[in-house]
Length: 298
Image (cartoon, rainbow, N blue to C red; front, side, top):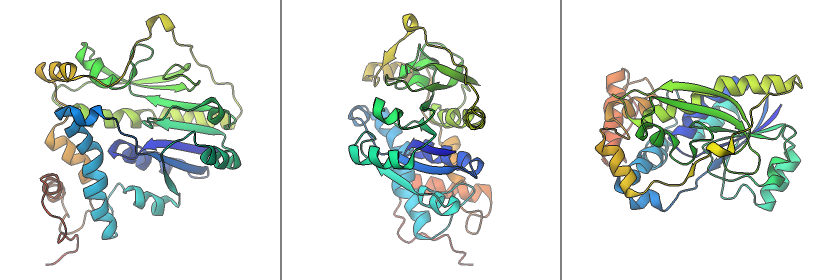
């Protein structure tokens, strides 16, 4: 099948592709990356820190360091993914731009897949794909439509995070639900590290969907109950402060460092897990990396 994969150019998007692409051998792929940001992310200190950890630190500090030295670990950077799986990754500013729509139409995809992409697909884009488009949403629908669904799930007393795959119908998180999977929330871990698992949790659902579409099977789905719909945008400062005051944390250093350590090659000076964690801690501390080398100097 011909697939268009749409993800954010951040840590979660890269982790998702690292675990999805190996399972899509034999399919023809077109990968789009979104760099979209929102002003509120820089106006609230906790969200500014979260944006740094999810985007700036991996994409502007760790990944360039690995790419310059032509090294990779268990997981590859975005540039490393292009080489590892022989696929081109394209950063786009507007998925509905006429020039991009024309190129997608020429590609003639069977399915468009969105995960954390942050762009709203116009009907003409959805119509390009023979089977339409699906989105992986990190929250129960329709009650947690919109942004920061995992945070709001926990803030409102939920004990389980949800990964929901649904058709895209032109609205925002409004399409019929195909399938969901659940992740028990770990109170001793950060929210960021568990959000990273939510998108990956949906990969088996997505692979099953692709296989069934390849056999031209009918895909059952459940229309959303609009009477239960709650759509929310970015949280305000009061909402973020209440979340933190309740004892929740957006991230935990040890768990976060363990995620990034999987991009580091398991060779000297990072031959063991503790050494890789130490390297990530150094990178996170803001130290100058110009002279840092992954080559064994012993």
